[in-house]
Length: 371
Ligand SMILES: [Zn+2]
Ligand SMILES: [Zn+2]
Image (cartoon, rainbow, N blue to C red; front, side):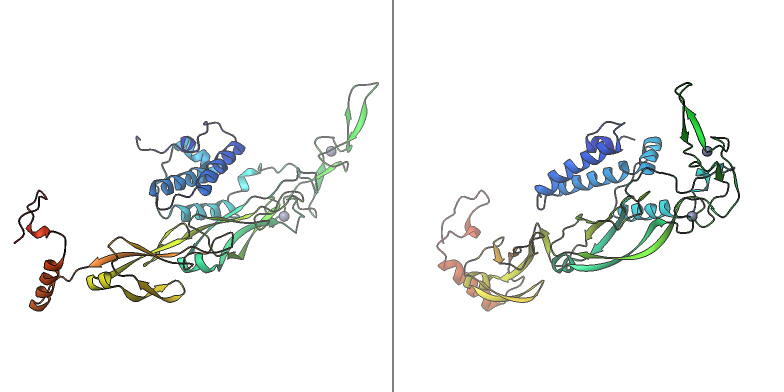
């Protein structure tokens, strides 16, 4: 596939890069694109989305494996993030973990020391409109969160069920380390010195130690967010292992295009059509803004393509301390048809104009004789 994207190339890393390297590469690139936003630069925007896409694939073990193995070319399309979300939910669902356990389930430990680790992050995508991005909005989202199984105390074993002698210490509860005469006995870490291990997994969590719980989380989106902004809600993700911290909830913001306003950085752009006499003589117009209407003075003599700023009617700065402008892009409109009287007026205007009439030039631009 000639057109296949190489996600490793996009992130500038080698094939065997570690999770940490993927993370670092992404953060470095994301900083570059976020610290120097290039308003209206579609190439930069597209490139940033590619970087995000590459990161979403390579930072996830299952997706990365599939990509390495099959070289699946994820089509770059609008519902890409929805797919990611659905996939994440599948991964988190309760089914499909059985085969991690050997059929015999040869003895589990209760409260055994596990390395404490932070829980995984939950990723969600939140779609909002431009008004929400400007004013801030609360969005409710359903997530499937892994929480510790209370029935088994996250151990995954049935502590009420039968026990059998520990295969590691033969039931002694201790194992010998070193050689005589300096040999010493150490508590068996498999049975924690009890000599016995549990033989049944916890029925509630099927031995996983955690269960999935659907939760509604309300994400308060601050005013000023832009498309692809990521919000991190600390400790709202999956439960950690052995008293480890919960992961984060990572909400990716998508701002829907607005029918009237274009956005570049924190400024909003809108077109404004003026009749030729309005442009020539000046006028006052009423325009809609994100907060109701505003009256704007148009000075005499404006031209098509001129821009008029309405200060502080754009998007508030995410960091606070002000907001962008609304910018009116002027377009002068000429009547498509003129009646006899108007034609006379325009011809009179032409005669009074100091410029040589273009109508009387030839196509090379040389001025012809004035008649
Ligand atoms: Zn359990
Ligand atoms: Zn033992």
